[in-house]
Length: 259
Image (cartoon, rainbow, N blue to C red; front, side, top):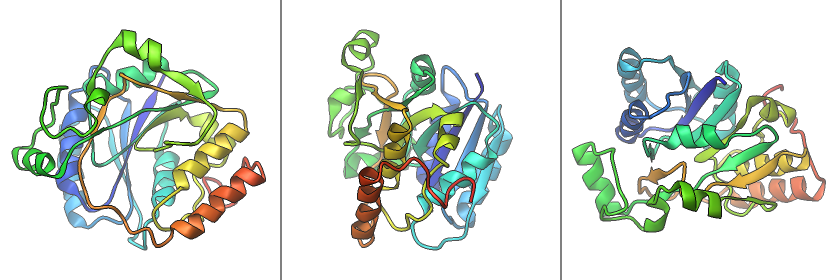
């Protein structure tokens, strides 16, 4: 099964480089990596060009102009570039456990989407990581806010990974599914501009069309670098769109992959 790893980024090449280094350490490599770039400056492009020469697989770059927070549009642009049957989504500040991709693929099934968790790294440790270019972590490292999420265990994963029928905790910073299921709902809704809820609304439409949610625990581990929160100025409007999708049981968005 062919796989694309889609990485959303915006103007943080120092973090993105550590993500690239963690990709190169994967026990199972994707067939391609695609950057969903929401308008980064030339420093990010230069970094991608550098790693295109180093990666043993294609490293593609989708870029769109910087015009507010438009993660939904950036992800759709990356999806259109994909040639794979399976898509794994992360953010450009998520450093991957070596088995991250292998775990996602081992649990992948048609008709489900996978929601993984994240290990939160505090501000001081994040600064240290960026300075030292550290991209390997363990349960015992300092600065981990929710340390239990750093445990990698096949036994615990089998016990605690489960199906859920809510959208609580949906985050496309650690998320995967079949590409054909993305097209069933027309991808991400590009009416979402500004931070918040575009991933939850996407999950609502997936569930409305019959795609089930599977939460992974103790597998597919990713370490989330600390950063200041994005502005919440668009959250009220985005919440309205989310609630509308829930109320009307929407499965399709008008402004998505197929405009």
